[in-house]
Picture 1 (cartoon, rainbow, N blue to C red):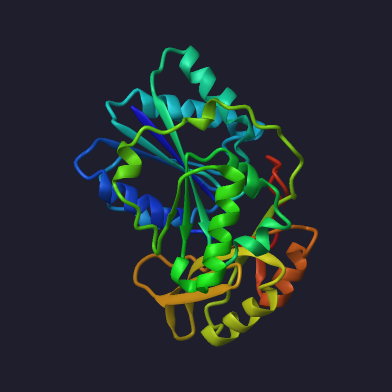
Picture 2 (tube, helix red, strand yellow):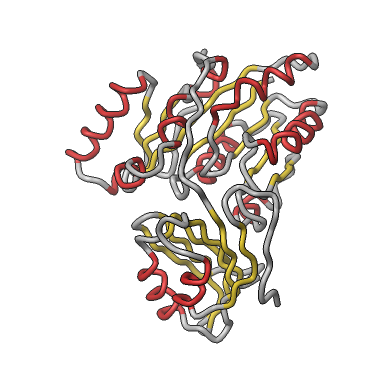
Amino acid sequence: MKIICVHGFLGSGKTTLIKRLITLLKGQRIGLCINEFGSVNIDQEEFKGMSIPMTEIHHGSIYCTCRQYDFLDKLQQMLSFDLSYIVIETSGFSDPSTQKSTFAYLRKQGYIFSICNITVVDAVTFEKWSRVVPLLHRQLQQSDYIIINKISFVTKQKKQTLHIHLESIYQTPIIETDYCQIPLQILTDHYTNKANEEIIHQKYMDLSSTVCLIAKDMSLSKLLKYLEILQDKIFRAKGYLHLAEGAFYIELAGDQLSWKSIDGKKDNLLVILYSARFTSSSEIASTLHSKIWEVRENDSTNTEKSNKQ
């Protein structure tokens, strides 16, 4: 059995990569584990309808103490199935420093598997976030492959600079792509299995999540304007929303703000990830002219709820 761990910062393209992996592994027995830092998993909608075993872990990173035992329990359940691959989508703020001990425990229980770590880099925003979020480097240290995604959205010079920079520091195979169109070779090649290497754990930037309840009579243009104001203060925002003009999926990742018309589930909850260094839940709610549905500070297991509708 192979376990494929997909790392990458918020909005880099992890969900897109996993959909690509599922396509490449069509006909194989696959299990999927999705890790979401907050309590609301927006990305699960992408995998509904796929006839594969799936489990979810919320409220923190699978590598943190607060969720490690839950992760091990659910992974053991997945390992008990007759699967060829387990694909794990880690939280954008997952720090893989403890990955070695996590999987060592499972091996002691008699489970046999190999591990492949793939880290997705957003070519557009990596330079910006790598300066203030050290854990991006630890994700890359753990990688057997580095995927530079959204490569056509940057200049040729920036692409070359980024490629040379990553290659010189991490000595890891690099694939440049758009929409994570990786080749099947990644899944069949022998890889170095860096999950067996020690990584020094360091303190990293605190992360909080806020879920805002967006009013259904708000216009799309107003919401986009409010998000543009927050653009330099938050890491990620995403949600399925019913607004004045109709239903939309809205996503903000770094400097990229996008939206598309949708059908189906619309809960009007906008999930926002941020650091207290840059903003606060009350400032976010005030800027969005919305009510706070839920606040989750840092990586704690306690959840504060206010104005829940």
